[in-house]
Amino acid sequence: LAKTTQPISMDSYEGQEVNITCSHNNIATNDYITWYQQFPSQGPRFIIQGYKTKVTNEVASLFIPADRKSSTLSLPRVSLSDTAVYYCLVGVLTGGGNKLTFGTGTQLKVEL
Amino acid sequence: EAQVTQNPRYLITVTGKKLTVTCSQNMNHEYMSWYRQDPGLGLRQIYYSMNVEVTDKGDVPEGYKVSRKEKRNFPLILESPSPNQTSLYFCASSLLDPNNEQFFGPGTRLTVL
Image (tube, rainbow over all chains, first blue to last red; front, side, top):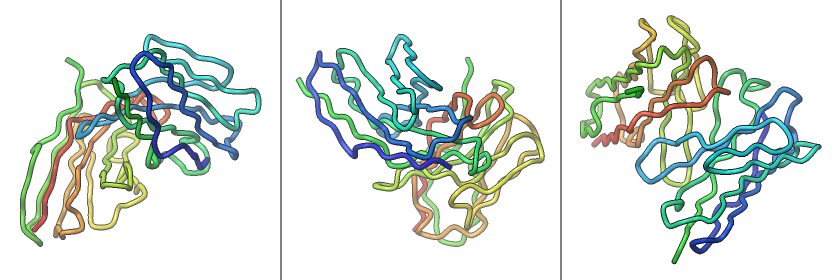
């Protein structure tokens, strides 16, 4: 199971773009990269998933370089309501069977 | 409405008293799993099930049991709860496997005295 490393916390202000980078040096060929968002006392919510290059949806963008050893979740023009923990997940189908390991995530705090 | 439901939402119990937390999904999902969340430790998977009658251990299965007799239900059983099982528990489901989008329930906050 590919190990991921992401910052423990980040601070931002409303209206700014936030980029959260996740390192996954031992990502396998078949692994996808998935990001979840979690608010306090709620279950995580799927944000975005990608395999390579760039993926964009109505909430975020996911940038994956050619070597796929890292990925960056980009949140455009954040607001206070984006304050949450963000988890990067990689490699759920290889090595670790069908387990799903979330790690400790990145606590994003958005201020006025 | 497509959803994952858990019951109870809050439970305070005593050491050794068997309890069951129910989980049900109405999306016809194959994959279901249970997680516990503790401060500073993130979400840790307890058990998962790829489909009916197939379950397997996650990262922290000790002290827990599960069953998957029907596709929609995946109860979590604590035969003899202990204080170190005090935690916030989440059930989740996805269409086929863990790489699909996981849909989480609202959580069950368990306190074992």
